[in-house]
Image (cartoon, rainbow, N blue to C red):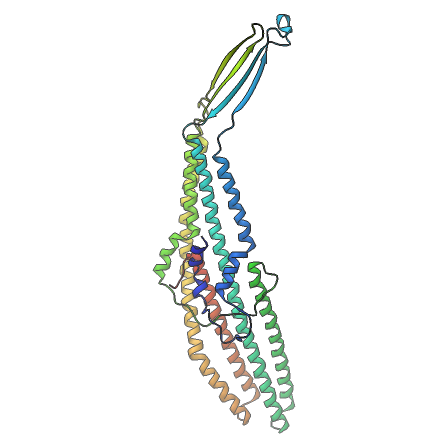
Length: 418
């Protein structure tokens, strides 16, 4: 089961390039997405707890297959009465052993219902595993994104330090007012504060990922991932076809089978079985012993399980209707996710391939011109701000691409890349 689920969310192999990111130092302990998901499947407390639900249902299957116990009964008649019955000389003692014989395959139908209930629980377990894997992948992407954000705040500090040094030179040469030095110092302090906050967010992301497998603290420093490597997608038609076999829809098939089994059980339950018995009777008056036989059979006059049959049939039809409604909703979500994925792919490409090189060139020219007094301090700071904002947009767009990819993986239950 884990093998199929691991394949179904192939983000473990393709979501992020699972090689080491250029922003991760080689000597740092790193973790890959594949390793994170493997740890989660092994140690996630929610998944571990659900395994006992399946074990409990196994016990119910065993119980449903047990035959009714025999019944031992005894009666004493003609004692403690009046007249001749006041004594015990006319007493009759009867001991009898009886057994219910189930008819119409009632035991087999009962076992089938219990097994179908387990199939439903197994489908719910598959859904829970997919949800857990997807959440681990989201946390991994969040960590990778926070790493890039931290690198960006480092860059902001470097630019602020370089600007403060350039302003100091110009102030010392009486080419800029003293106010620019103060403004540059404040800008540096703000960049340092942002960098410290980014470090806090990065640490929080590490702990959140480690919590996926119930670790008290992370034993890694970085996520091994290239946020800007965007895995290829399958076609929309392929994704649409994959919806039919997702665990979210498979559970309705399991439910339909359960309702069919319940209908069969209710029909078989019309004949609840025969109860036969045999025993001995002691006649105290004559000191004789005789055999006694009994036979009982409920008569299905008023209660023929028609209510249970109608309920099971209605639930069977309801499962089919719910499956159709879920499929329609999933198709709508898939279309939205797919368009979002294409949009984020386009956005990342435009920013990194066209906008960023031009902005970096513009900042280099602005910095050169500022040092020679042709551009003002405000023009330099504005160019730096635009570059940082553009880089931040690239990080957010790339992270959103992966988040959207995870949602598609979760929705379709299949890998986007082979």
